[in-house]
Image (cartoon, rainbow, N blue to C red; front, side, top):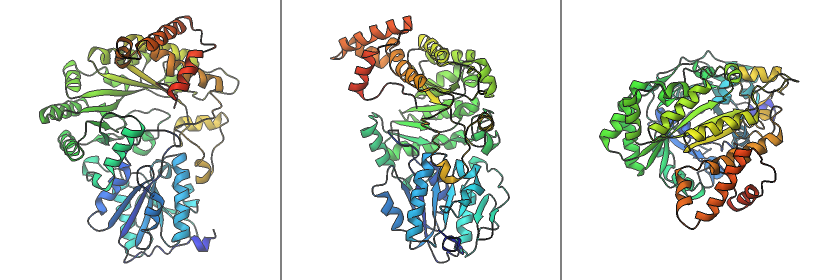
Length: 510
């Protein structure tokens, strides 16, 4: 594509459609979470424009749905995190280019916000919406509708034949000043039905975003870069009101709070729980917590958390080795992890602890935490509370973070274009110079099969006691208990048989 054919004069006067596209964020099998980022930036435009929110995972015939609205489009917006979502976004952007080369393409989301200039260098992009998008995107659309480039819009970058222009940043907006996400623009029911059919979810579940940012300074997390360790949460009354409306509208059984740190403010959590109880919504809910925060909650608040329907908390533990926790600036200790596990056990709250393996270390030096060290600690968690689930992710250096810079220093290849980033998959990174293939297999085998069978959760205990699977499960339990006690995992015939029959393990490496 030549500069001339790519160039647009940004004059979209008289157009009334805004097309927003959410590419699929990862290949393979995964749970669908609503593209709420698109809904939030659409909210301020709803009264003045004809909006079309199209989700590759949910919208039937999504490609034609995008292309058929281009004739009267002000622009096409694409949301993306680093990795596979970029690949899918580029593929759609190039289809848009071929069909309607005069329609500006605007990118937003984590990755474009971290690399606005590099993103604009791609022929798949004209404008980047940097950081919070609800105000910025509205002003970009208004500028295009007025027939001009977004030269006066804070928090954006845009392409011209002469150079890429990066405007001054926009100040962070308090989340309470952001309009509620218009769920009716998303196909919520279809997303729920897909999750029930393909992920065997028994409950009608959707997501709700109640806060942004996190006060933590974890060295692997892009939130600290984008939000400058600044956390703001929706007022408790607003959270309860909007959740109650969602429950009624979509007949929900469960709400997943998609916040990075839902439990950052104990007073707010207490008020939310009291509101949910008072409304008698009769739902369950799930949210994320820091391990150094949750176990410090007051007993009376923990009682409210359970009573209000908290089904599970997601605890970002990451490691149990003090040198690693110090390296990543986690601000938590292994003892914090154990205390959080005990609190969940004592108050009847489920928990999923997430860990990361393969943090960077200098060439020629051993890792500061071995795979076996991590698995041993996970066994301690299971001994405290068998209903604890554990997931282990391979460390992926995320751009804009201190550990990304360290990984580059230690020899990681740094992508130099949007197209190169498209093959960099944070969610399911298959190749890591710090994790050997044998270690990945050990994690999947032990964390995904032997530990869950050796320390059965309430669901498996029911199967061990009753039903047609009672004796096969008892056999698996006995074998797994013997394996974990001896540490002997060679010739895992039972694991291979189970994989063949079940197609997936309980807590797979992700």
